[in-house]
Image 1: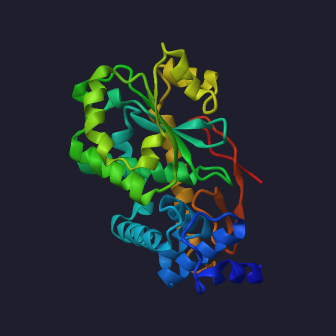
Image 2 (image 1 turned 60 degrees about the vertical axis):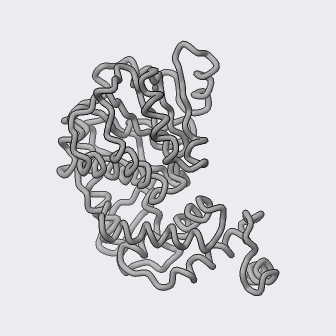
Length: 316
């Protein structure tokens, strides 16, 4: 393996060429370059910057190591200040009361986490609360990604939405910045379901904030347009989609709270048990479901889907 890596890097004096890798060996060369550029990391930064994480930042910057390093350093600084891993359910429970954004209790066709949003259920107006709520939901979605999955689906149900529910442009810009720059390659697709004409004005203002990669992941879907509905064929099961869109009780706050409190314990365990106990490259990804078996053993496990209100069960 080491000879392969040396061969891949020899063409540019020990540095890999600035192009998309054509093999796992070339990918690893890029990862090694980025890790070397970052230098030693400690604490939560070390836990966060797994090889899988580094690959996401490299993909987001078209495998340009220098640009990826800057992007990742910006994220590590942001995380050290904002501390997203320390946000708990109690901090965002009020934002969650109406079910305006929540993690679905099933996965999409590819086994990815699904975040559901109902903009017409907006119940608060403070930017800080909106952003903290978004970050909590992103961290929670990542925590519940099955092993081998890195991305999530957003389903935004615009039925019943009007301009009175529009969030301020400043909030939209900050939310977009966080998603694109601090959670790169985490979004598989954003499904905008039945957006009204009034949304087009807001969209025209927000669109310039999106980078081309994110923009291509946004799908406008109209229930009366069979062609646009086909965009859902490879993403969501029709019966599951119906459960969300046609069920007025799709969200139960008390039951969801119990699930999130369980997830808070999983998250706390992850960020605590990782510190000082793994070497770079061997750390479990935050997207892996983990359970603290005892004081010396951590076991990766697959998540079993649960209904809101049930106690999450981890299967070996």
